[in-house]
Image (cartoon, rainbow, N blue to C red; front, side, top):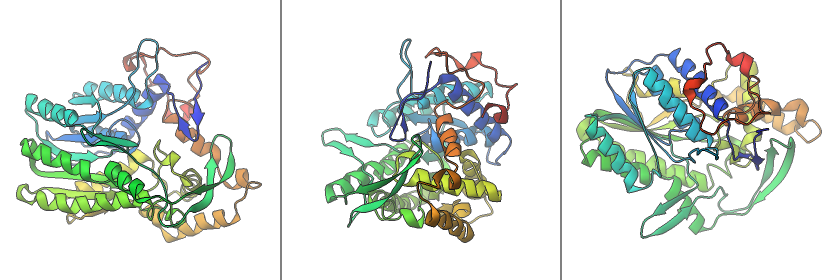
Amino acid sequence: MYRPRIKNNICTNAHPVGCFYSVYNQMLDALDKPIKTGKNQTALVIGASSGIGLASRLALTFSAGMDTIGVYSDRAAQAHKYGSAGWYNNQAFEYYARRANKLALSTNQDAFQKNAKDWVIQKLQQNDKKIDVLVYSLSAPKRKIKGVGEYISTIKPIGEDYRGRTLDVFEENLRDIEIETANQEEVDATVKVMGGEDWQEWILRLKKAGVLAENFKTVAYSYMGPEQAQSIYAEGTLGCAKAHLHETAIALDNSLVDMGGQASIAVLQAQVTPSSSVIPGMPLYISVLQQLQQKAGKFENTLQQVNRLFSEGLFNKARKPEQYLRVDDLECNASMQQAVKAVFDELNQENLSELVDIKNFKQKFLQQFGFAYDFINYEQKPDPLTPPAIHDFSELSYQKAG
């Protein structure tokens, strides 16, 4: 038997075949939504193996037809040890990209470190390539700086303690939570990890090495958050990090003027990702939001949202260059937020299962780790080193599998 191991809305294992299938379906989704860009372009995705970063790399490859380089940090599989979902996702991505005759180079190392930046520069020079697009989608819990120390990010309010409710997805119950306010050291550490410093270091290092193309574009991902999450998100330690990221975009944009370059912030809507699932209150909010969006026919999955960001925003020549590329309109719609608030106002433990489709959130969450697919026999342990090439998913549909 090979089942998901869950603790505090975190899944610590992954199923290879399910991960391959998840990537396969996103690839089909991307192929169905072509994006017009220049020919023979190359993209670099930092934080490329799961969630929004993976969706970005899939869209850039299969929608926009670009060669890509990916930087990620995940546990690799061994003969008798399973890898993480991100590692399996990357194996699947490389397999499908190369079958499509696209360059797909990846490095599994800490993106914060100089070695990762030097590796990318070396590969670009060896392949006579320059970067046309850089997507910064790094979501890391900590950052080491050689000779300085280690910084650990926190998700805490600032100024006063946070009291609220969160959803224990796998126990299927509401839980009251209280989080004490962050001290200045925790705020500074979170900015150091999740702010814009490393994004800027990547751009400046690549520019100095001469591997950025003319009219180069770069985008980093951000999120504003709903009203009920402001104290734990936008007004908390995460908000400080995002504010620094936004300030960095302005500085980078100015530094790229000489080459016709552009730096932007993409403001995304809430999605079920490994990162969002651990933010207090977000699983409950996302569950309510997405079930209402689906009912209203206003729902986009992660790949669809990223595709719209690229096609209508980043690569849309008819649109003026903007500091903020916002694709959170479906979430921020006033009537949608009113509907979400109405559910929250009525919600309690007794009516939880009636008002909230927890199973939908749970399925989306588990499928990112290769679980909750009907066609896979989870009673049988898979080979940790299962290659994507031995699986043919062409006879399966997403509806049948999930």
